Length: 261
Image (cartoon, rainbow, N blue to C red; front, side):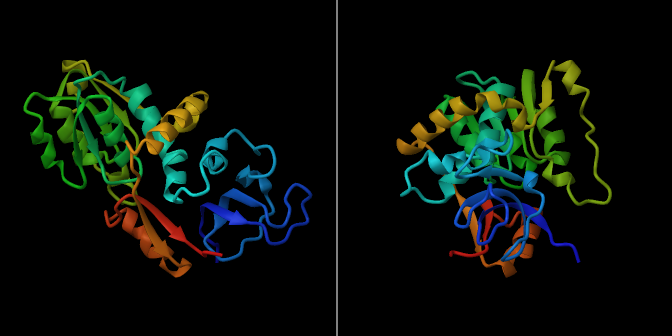
């Protein structure tokens, strides 16, 4: 039976590879198991005590940039999920002060930071955590829609966009693990309202990471941004946590702690 893989933080307990020493911390693709035997070291993104193994240094670089006293949850806000929110909002959405911003899955790992960044930028922000009804909170229409959901939520938002609105397509979580994914019916609004809709992947913007890290760390230190994680203790709770991602059970970044040791 194949072990499920996922991104994780691990400690080396034995090694025959000279590049990895006992006691080192690494991150990358590891198994959902208490101990993993890793042969393909290219699946590791960051080796804490050496040069990064590839360009994805953002994943754990924050662990050596922040004070050791900070809670673990700040690692996620300054890592991949935080960088996704930063790139999507500032680079794709091109916000202006006073813009009307709608964020779907606003209580999730990325959405919670997008909403806070938008507020700090002087925007009017409404976040949705499961219902398309909140598009009605924009009687004057939506300038920016940060889409983490897709499907019916995207359809409803498109009808409420203002002329020259911007849509950052990030997650499409409603289309995951469904046998009959639903299409979008209101794409004609892209033409009629001259809307720019763009999908993105944060790894295409690694040149922005140093600026992001400096900015986001300052905001954390000043208490102007908070980050929520949904922690499940024990590997045995991993499957339930994973399923919960697709049923909306989590609030914040979903994390499974395999061991505190």
